[in-house]
Length: 140
Image (cartoon, rainbow, N blue to C red; front, side, top):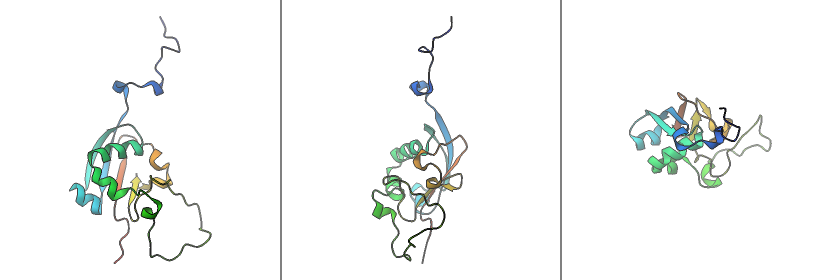
């Protein structure tokens, strides 16, 4: 007997037993490395997006969220640099408020800034590299 379309499991109907798990390599620099006490580790989480990775990581290490994620536009903006020109060259992307890193911190997936991909909706696959970088830039 064949299953009808109503009896088939659709990807959106996953049960807990069928939930996707992803394993990534996490690399940390600066204050993130100091906080965790290590510069690289393997991390397995339920899901397959950067958002799900960060949610799982921050639930285990809540202090990292404060180090990396800005709660306001002001926290994500560096001050004291030269003023930006009225028209910036090229294409500039910015994550929405609540998904921005604090000034001088960045999250990269396979060497590319997350805001240049799909932000926190960037899909992750087994073996991907996620870098948690703070400070991204250092000035005397």
